[in-house]
Length: 294
Image 1 (spheres, helix red, strand yellow):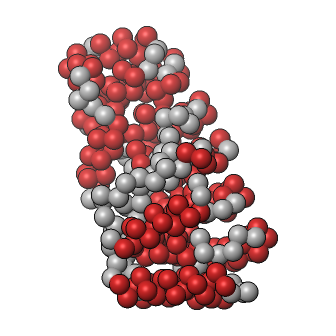
Image 2 (cartoon, one colour):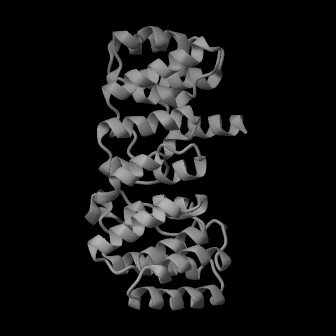
Image 3 (cartoon, helix red, strand yellow):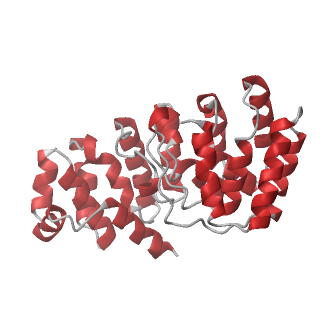
């Protein structure tokens, strides 16, 4: 999508969520960055933005921004804070000569603090030369800081659009390991694959062996690949004393096209009926699981 359209979108979001002094500062810094022959003005503004913009969530009424031209789903920045939006706006002021732009942005990734990294990774989808930043995004997924990992993995169309399958699978598995909400991973269903289903069930077996619970959204990854190798797992989940886990097993069986899985579900008519009427949804199961963790 055109740089100008993204800038206008961010300006509107910031105008609705920030004071006039902060907006004047942002306009001044933008002019300095645009007309500077070195990246120093940008680095300074990116760092000092925290003095002018707060980590307060933006208005949830923001209309999602279309990214159709880039092959990505529309997204909303309503989960961003004002500081993220301001820093993203500053990023878009950098002159877009590829060599110097990449050098500047890579240097910023290397020196950024946690909140600066959050802004950078969440903004990947809006940046020029986005595909060239795939190695950086993959590297970022290695972090153990949930704030930074979430910026890449959750509510972000970038990984689904650009990550190769192996790296996509690692992102999803890390989200499971960190017990992050899978329902916030964009295009999770579209990018399910047999290798990911197998790895997810291996992880579930490890959790069971350690006497630990398995997050219910794991079973969502099996829906398109249900087969004889997963029937014993499905039996265990459907017979679980954990109501949330049982609901997840029922939904996985109901949504699969594997007849033996549906036969197993038929032995639980109440669960089957709930699935048929839409009473169970993956997002709602994920939300309930996250609430129970708090």
